[in-house]
Amino acid sequence: MKNYFKTFWAFALIIGFTVSSFAQDSAKTSLTLGKIEPYCMEVTYDKTSHLIFPTAIRYVDLGSEYLIAGKAEDAENVLRVKASIKEFESETNFSVITDDGRFYSFNVHYSSSPEVLSYDLLTMQKTVDKASGNDVLFEELGNNSPSLAGLLLETIYKNDKRIVKHIGSKSFGIQFILKGIYIHNGKYYFHTELVNRTNVPFQIDFINFKIVDKKIAKRTVVQERPMVPLRTYKPLGEIGGKTTEQNVFLLDQFTIADDKVLLIEIFEKNGGRNQMFQVENSDLIKSRLITDMHLKF
Picture 1 (spheres, helix red, strand yellow):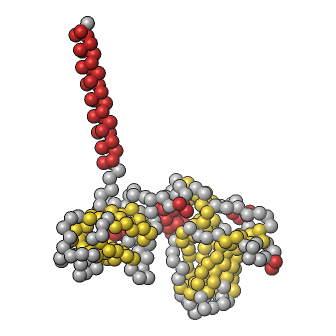
Picture 2 (spheres, helix red, strand yellow; picture 1 turned 60 degrees about the vertical axis):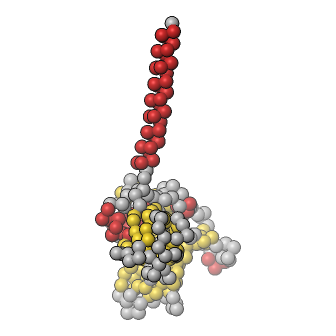
Picture 3 (cartoon, one colour; picture 1 turned 90 degrees about the vertical axis):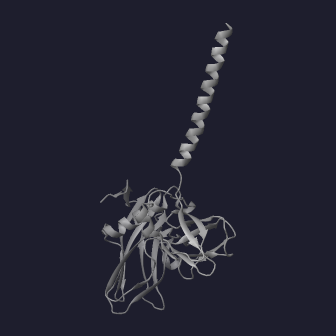
């Protein structure tokens, strides 16, 4: 009987040790699988390093007081980094999140004479194949991956198909049309086109999306409900003479009552060739569905 108990407890200890080891190994494995490989770079005190990201910078976290960093003036996607003290010995780090949801990690060492002072992150991604994964979810996009949203914006833009053919405006040699409305995971994608048939460039000041009463003449500020785009495929800029430009805007999903319309307005900077058109609820509910990264045409 004593030998039986000895055998039982020995077996139990072996099982317990095995399970514990397996649990620890599993934890190590899962963390290893999720590891984000950092980029390595050198900084110095007397010179500034510049990192050019594919999209605008949203967040920067410095690992220590050895570094100072900031976005370059008038360049939302360029980060300036340099050492705040000379000859620091220990390794430090910093992290960056961009508007497309990418997360970047950097390990930093001090060098009195860095070999490289300017980095193009898009080129680096393609070179080392780091373009997959590392997505950060932003509150305004809900469960939509920023990189997926960006890819859908790009796909709609490049396909450039007109599926809505009755909505638009034209005056002063400028034509502003709605080419399509798409929907994916609780978000609308509005595909627009601006045609400048004159020789005078059209400088876009801003664009408005707002829900108003159909009887526009009676509307007030209280009766207007602005809809702010979450993303825009291309920055609003200048449409040259005899030129056509398109764009895609990402908005939260919504519906409107029959006595209201979605008013989309585009304004010319220092000019009066403003354009606008209306979208009714009957148009919204006919939005084309996007599934599995393919557009249903």
